[in-house]
Image 1: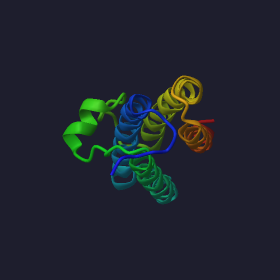
Image 2 (image 1 turned 180 degrees about the vertical axis):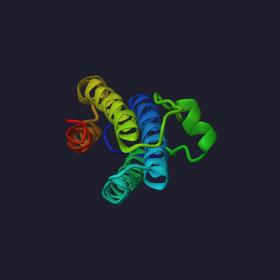
Image 3 (image 1 turned 45 degrees about the horizontal axis):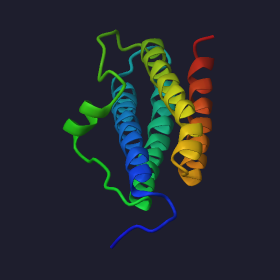
Length: 157
């Protein structure tokens, strides 16, 4: 059935393509945060193990909401690791020690990259593609990533 929500198909397609990139970024960040949770080794192991768990749990919610937003505007969400690795702006993994500060620095960089991507799309989604719903959605998601980045950054002080 045709999606008739007051946004042209061409505009919804462009927005969905950007959301697919975001979905890929969220998945890669989720996997990297899971890696930190599983493999962190340092004197602060227990607290960081729990901290990373809280972060990946939040990212699971982001992943689902991005995919559902794609469906709401009439497009399918990519759902394979191969497609995520082709679409992501992030690097999959970097060699480092498994101490908490190494993981935190890498995850912080990824959150900041996602924040910049989201910020760059807020106005175009609203103004060029007439999708105020997705613009509002990614504004909220940006704020969530900003808070997560702040929490990561605070561990490095």
